[in-house]
Image (cartoon, rainbow, N blue to C red):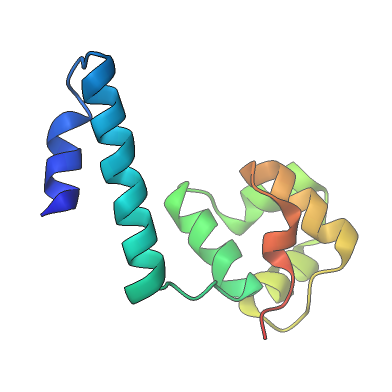
Length: 106
């Protein structure tokens, strides 16, 4: 119900009180979800595969963007190989996300 209200408010032009209300409601929803519906971080291979799919990119696009070898990208996305720190930074730059997201999850 809170998410529905947030979705209704987002496209509107709000006055300062409306913006404060939207901010407070958003914060409450975030805290609630963190507490009662936490989302586990994705493993690096699943993260990279999902990012490729979400952005409509192929492994070939990632190869061109990073300069990594075809076999390396294939192994990283399939989970056959762990990311090196340098690879984390290269791939993170392509997707404009923090490199630490590619650290192995426990």
